[in-house]
Length: 489
Ligand SMILES: [Zn+2]
Ligand SMILES: [Zn+2]
Image (cartoon, rainbow, N blue to C red; front, side, top):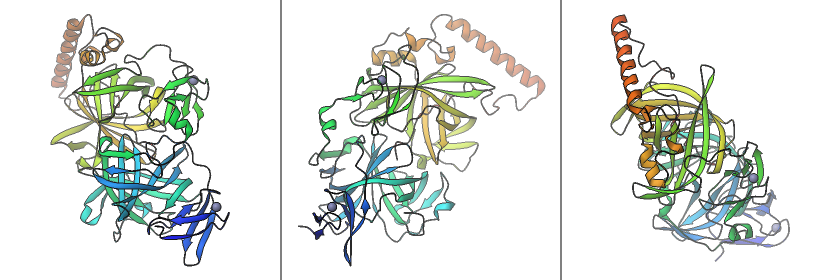
């Protein structure tokens, strides 16, 4: 059965390699990374214990992804300074092929090695750069990062000594294409991995590998600050949690508090744990955030609600004091026509014009989120509009994420979640949101008068620039609609 075997150079335990693509294995007794070569087995050094990351699969599991059988042979844990994430080494078709499998943002990312492709040097890469990858097509870079290998288990397809710093870029193509440009330690060698992104329901797992006791028994996450039990609303997917009892923000894998904030003083308009059905899909509200931007010396604050569904993954509802409620979905940046940038973006046969650009900051988070959320975390947000719909680009930290938001009346949301139509969700929203209670007609009249006045002034002054000025000075709101973050990847 084993394609190679021998004794661990460190402790003498038996080491077996199950498939030909496995180059190294972490000794399950002494945790040495053992590499096989012409000279026999070599010890690359001991790895740290595996961190208890949120994970849906384990080494030893089998299953199918979009109908294709796979087996999990190993895992590496990487970290770029905010806590570890997992990448799994898998074989497909009963050992006929191998690849990498990762979970992030409610999706599975699977790639396999594509030899013979030339790629640009790591230092020449930029976010949203288009990279042709032979017959697989053109891929667009979403993320350029480094990650340190902090731990590993099982078999591995390469010799990664502990502390190895991997330089990489993640890219997307149309039709759910995904690729990783892996520059290893950036000393000239590289590999290209090409594959796809799959929705969660396309994965079927048979749990055969060992799970930590903590994971099996607990339907709760424990707040490391106050010890409070926080129900896992989205299974083992949360990376960070904002405690509803004490306000502490903690990292799930590290079991450490990463930020302090005040306790929740009032309940969010959509309660965390609330369930609602929109477009036939049942969502659960799993997190609440407040974000803000500086506008002429004042903080402009809006609220975001993270929804999760097993079938479609993550969505956002955003409550903006000026523009009201909107429904936000992630956009595959490979689908965008960026030839008109920085002022125009094409998507889905529509043109979006740049409205404003600002820096958005995370001020408060409650509940569970799927990325390494930090208070004070800032991204540069650019909004492009077509009518009332917004395409938002959020950039920072070597990545860019795009999202699309469309207005959604509070009454629709209230009905879906069984909340009062005149409740908290209807408060503090301008008439433009369509849901303000009293005085709606009067406000509308005022707005019409103002619009007419502006038009008159413009016509009189033959002023070409007083409407549609950029950077948030017009156009109803400077919020980012976005809230779409990359997960740990
Ligand atoms: Zn050993
Ligand atoms: Zn707590």
